[in-house]
Length: 451
Image (cartoon, rainbow, N blue to C red; front, side, top):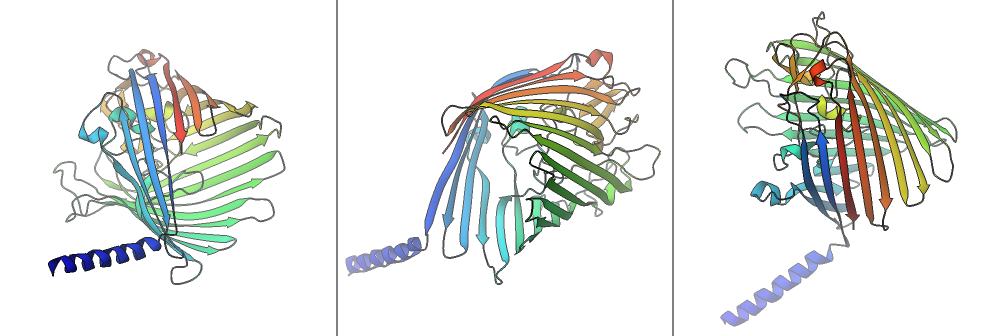
């Protein structure tokens, strides 16, 4: 009798499993493997900085996407990022990078609901695009390579309303969960409205995003009931003017309630950002493009009763290879020129020049929002990223941080294999004191395989 029951149970299980698998209409497996050799030096001559490093890096991603019943799909992506020769649980385990379900025509035809860990990026990534702003990735990633991490996903719920030519995104994300019984989380919420121009492939966007974060008392170290609130409202327009010219403009205003790191006092946040770009396309065989862009991110004026330093929120912008590692994406004038061309159909060459100045001079005491933190008089250190904890002497007589030149070459060895070489050279400006006037550099070589 027991054998008959076992056979019947196995048959039933087979039927159920068969029915379940029949619901999967298609499965797509993809991924990529990247290996790099990296050498860089950002000590800039300072005896207090320890930024000279050489290491090898591997980044591996495996993605599985499945179409289930009609209008239902799911995606899971796993990732591993580690420096070669490092063998411990934090560096050799497999982490969850994406895991979300997409429900199209959710109750009503124009609504799509996406639930789970997913990428979020709007516009050029000035406000939303990376939960750690390219600086402080997962604890599983070694400190030296956090700025190179490929992790960009948010734990979020997103509703997309498609009312062509309008698209409305409503977003709520839990960026960081502290203790579940404390008010110490970091959350993101907001909406983005996009309009696609049918006549010339232009796009317009209006958005408002808010974020709250825990605020700790500097004396007691306890989490306060009063949190930091940052709201960003802005818009972006991008349109081709002709076959050769493409122009874009984005502006945003920040407001909210913000606790200053140095004083511990809450102040009103009033900050601004503006970004413009002009692209000239030669329309030649090499698809040569020249892009000139200008970015202004407000800094804190010591004479103002408000905090005027732009908060990067969850930005996914990197102005250049090395400057973005020295300071956060705030209090800056960036002038950026990029030239790209393809002398052969399998070779891409690029050259980037960046000049950065501070929007406001650094006061004697600087907040984290500026991207630099005061440790001793005249000595500052980056607040985030792989350079965190390194010291630089500055001169308050100048706002010029420095100039940087980046060059890169990408060779398509095959359709799926790319070889890339990237070089960066940073020339300090007068903001950095004479003892920090040595140049910084970075060289990265590697290959990537997509499958």
